[in-house]
Length: 53
Image 1 (tube, one colour):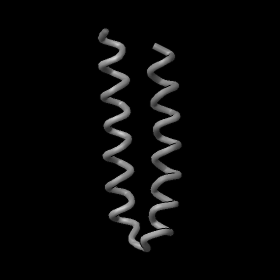
Image 2 (cartoon, rainbow, N blue to C red; image 1 turned 120 degrees about the horizontal axis):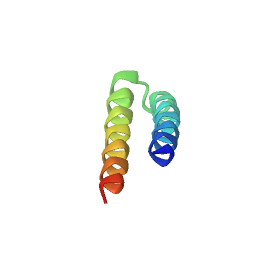
Image 3 (cartoon, rainbow, N blue to C red; image 1 turned 60 degrees about the vertical axis):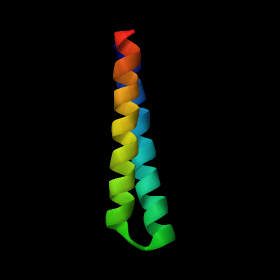
């Protein structure tokens, strides 16, 4: 179970960093936030599927 929470924490940090970097690059924070949330959701789903076996 700790693997899941660790992966979620890393994914959340990466999503936050990606939001900031992409927001600075393209100048639109809403598009960057949408992209980061999508990637974070994909990471959480992958971790959950891995836990299920």
